[in-house]
Length: 152
Image (tube, rainbow, N blue to C red; front, side, top):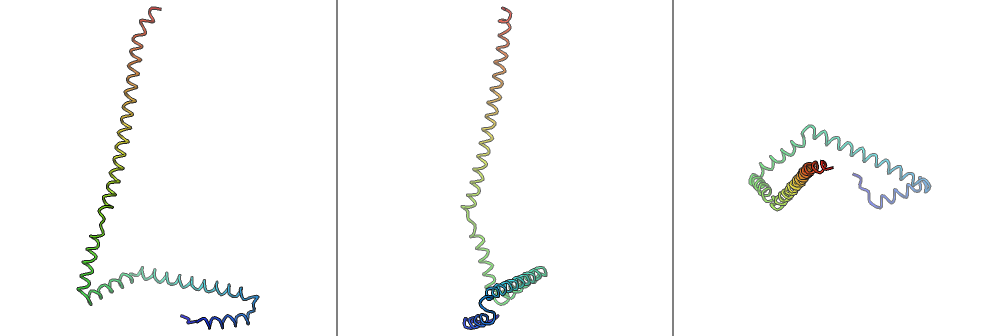
């Protein structure tokens, strides 16, 4: 855009110092900075709006497809090799250890769930057996008590 060197900036700074004065110079620089910031923000907003409009109209996909077709037309062997390379890369990117690690972690979690369920079922069974044993003991005690009560 503007091609300003250090000497031009120095001259502008000296002229601003003389014209504005040292007292109001920081205020001027602050205002200029705010103006430049607002201008950059407006330019950024305009650029993003134009990119969004291009995305909505499909111009980006069209330009990428045109670029690919031109590349294929100018270098068909290179395009075929690119396809082969991308296919081979997708096959070599597989990491069997990470897949195995995921499966082993999943299996370990499932084993812990099964063990917890088994322990819970065993505890419930033991509790049920203890309750049945208590009930039998109370029945036996109740059956043995009436003859002792008749003696009184």
